[in-house]
Image (cartoon, rainbow, N blue to C red; front, side, top):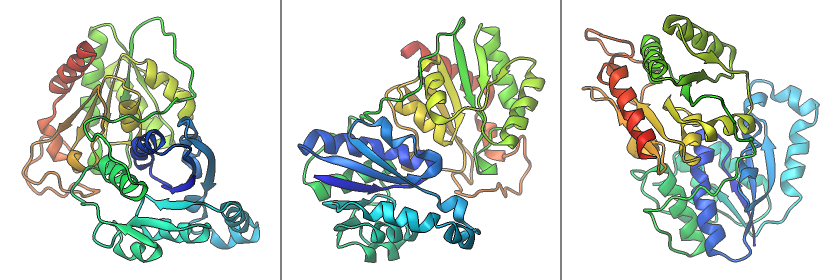
Length: 340
């Protein structure tokens, strides 16, 4: 049985899909998957042994440049690649209009969430079969339930197996090191820079080397400012996901905000602490046996807003992170590392 998964972005959403793939691979003999994914994350699905083919799509790059991509025949080539296989099943695990539109291009019966379950209800009209899955469940469980309902098996919700085999080489470091995942897209998700600096100072005092990964130029600048303020820490080279996975897998511990790399650390069973301010950890929190999530305690949290608009007196910015000071985070990370 050949199944096409439509789950294009973001990084965390792609990682959330792996446990469902593992469930299906264990429960349905002979099932194999192709995966339609945004080109920035194209190396990731192949980490799962049940995924045979990855089909990259460049929607983010094409946005605002559609006519140029059309003239270059990039869009036509993508559609041809998507249609050159007749699938037994197409599962839209994203539930958005853009993912449903891509599912419509492929050949095969389409399934997804019903109109009460999809993030964008109109997307459900693109499917021949629809499944009701509560939106109050965690994203990992929602996708697992969608796969199980369509493919006809049960799964143990208490056990989560990502099943991935990252391609990055393990790192043989001279000293135990930590990765601090400071970068994220929403301004309201950013833990204050001086908190990162203090956390780095606390880690260095206990003989840990602290590494700061980055990808975008503004992330590098932010890391450099933190390192300068802390008087310790090391800026990593700009790495792709495969190379970075080797560093994540060999780290003594990881501290991060709500970002895709935090979900990757959880999937790799690295001792980790992830900080949640405006977002709900019960719906999208990192999931893993060595993972601990810390949610702020603040009157307006979780607000689900990209920008903090709290009008009262602020001890820090964003205001809600005052309830997660560096000493508390450091103790939580030490506990995770000791428990692992």
